[in-house]
Image (cartoon, rainbow, N blue to C red; front, top):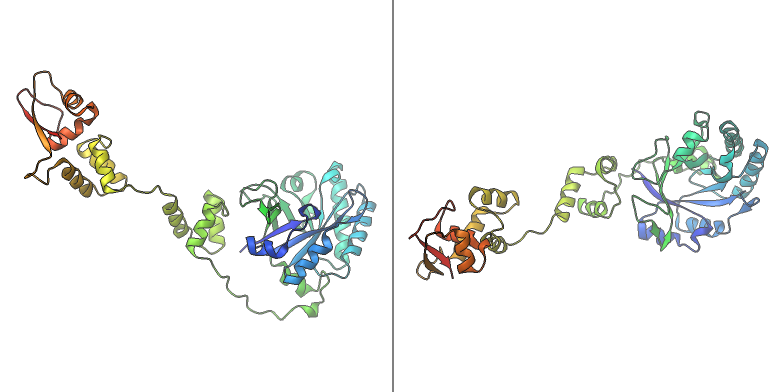
Length: 373
């Protein structure tokens, strides 16, 4: 089951990690530790965010915004990154952020740069990964040479990246799956599909010693939300659409058909009362005979109940106190003309047919018809 997380930097300002956890159920945070795009620097908000995470037991990872044009520059960036990582513990990987001006390198050079950075960080005892977009993994680097490093892939879409990945950054300023704001700020959002915390602690990486990893215990079964809760989340756009929604619900352990049934019920237009439908029948909105019956049944209404109400409204159920008057058909009359002259609207002719039990529009001179009062 995917875990939901965010990645943040000084651009998010004074965001509250505990509020993000309670507001949206954030389960991990990846923090910008520093970069080299403006000289080597440490992100001004890293310590604040890191301390917030540790104070509430929030698993945390880190990333470094790269700017290397040569292997030597990449190794220097890695050494600086390692110096910033020292003395801290990270339950999630530490990543080389490959974007910006780095992408101006040719594919072979950029691939060598990424390997040089990640190899040095990995040898320093860190679970190391690469962050870039789905398209950049496919066009800017030789990804076949980068498979030993975990992949954090950005793709702002309702469809998952084609590049194999452990973490998917699915939204930032654009977000097709969830609300893009958390704590009132636009925040990059991610799904993680790998149990990094267990792997990293067990291997004694990222500032942990192998002995610090707790003895493995059976993982508790995930607490599933009710189908009603999941249906509400579907309606709010948190589970995508179509086959993507179906696959994600199934992967998370939910009964897609049961959830979708609740969604359909919640989104179905409210039904009208039998009285309302009967009045629409008398107004000619539902046709006549079998056509009327088929339409009413197809719309989910009880035809017998509706027709009984129509008859009642026409006075058929109270012969002792009829609510109609009698009209004798004249030569040249039609039901439409009679309705127009006697009832004020030709479109009310179905009321005359219903009141008189007529199966067709044929009438003849001298015929006596009941007309609604």
